[in-house]
Length: 98
Length: 149
Figure 1 (cartoon, chains in turn orange, brown):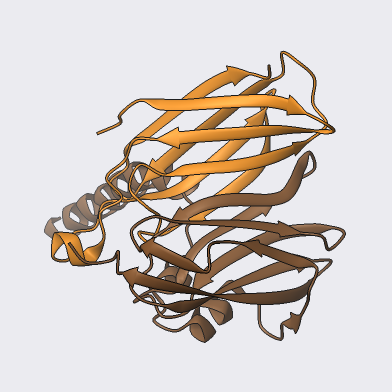
Figure 2 (cartoon, helix red, strand yellow):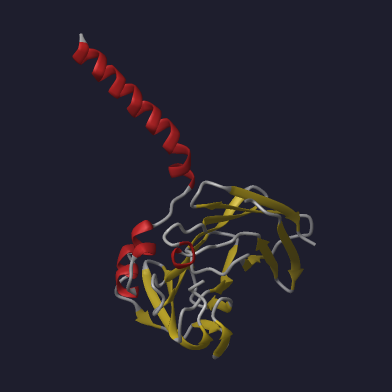
């Protein structure tokens, strides 16, 4: 189930813009007759340090895209985003700030 | 003897169950009560964010009319200094709470998500800063719902 993830982290005036795409059905209760399948937790790390923790519901769109902003940042900083869904599937991706 | 053996088996089962369940529980701090709430009031209560104060320092950037309820882009910026958490709720969804983000040192209180909306509804954002809770809403009109199949 863990499809590919895509991420881009760009340094823009004063902050780092992080955009991440996750491949996930994000199936609701209504769509699946009571067996929803969706990402519940996501974590954003910079150089190994957690900076954002998110809890999300089935009301987030299929193949979710998120944008985050990080204070400052320098080129080459390692950004890691990982997720965990309600069936225990997990995936992560890593990129360097460009 | 039989009783002892049963006790031992029970203890073993408990240890196994704890061992198997723990990794998931440890990883996933997911506020089940809040996400299962059917009204935004209950969801906020479960999140511990009651007694909110209206604020215009929370900026909700979203279309006024969303043609497709399955993908409604919602961008939230909190200009309240020291914002540590942002929750997004769609008041009229079956389960209003869509997402909650905690921001630690190094992150700016900004997030953009794509949400599903079943029908035209107010989108409520609750930001927490310094133990206080602030809120703002914006109505988004939906022409085609995005919750059903």
